[in-house]
Image (tube, rainbow, N blue to C red; front, side):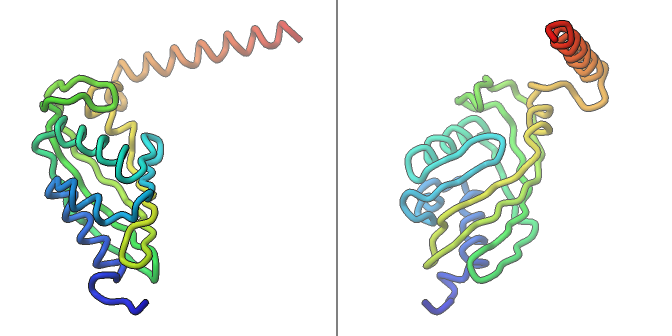
Amino acid sequence: MAINAETDPASVGRAYFEAVGRRDLEAMTAFYEPGGVGEIHGLVSLTVPDSYRQWFGDLFRAFPDFKMEILDVIASEEKVAVRWGATGTFNGSANFEGLAPNGASVDLQGCDVLTIGDGRIRHNDAYMNGAEMMRQLGALPPAGSAAEKATTAALNAKTRVLAAVRERRR
């Protein structure tokens, strides 16, 4: 198939992320081939349309002011990498990843690598700093804080105790 504006990976990737920025679930889903997979590494694996539509619908309900902007696009014959920035306030009507809305603001960057064939997304490998997202949502203590240091100390103490128990069993 000849590459044109409708099938060129860079154009497809850019148009898809513009649909995400508009929170347009119908358009977002239409960019994928049926059964396509969106893997948000470390967070969730989604299959289009079912779990994909549900997860993003919940995201948009949880963050009603969700905004996404394209920062960079790099493409090859069947792959496109899109670096993005996203912001939002967790004050909507849906939970997100088990958390109830608490009014926290998020400001994140990530990168998605889309595999595209015949103008449709077949697979999306998405990467972002999940720990930073959880810090911004209040589910993890702030980096460098006393709470983070106490959590690290408790984990290290547990590790030492378990190592001592294993050593005694030998």
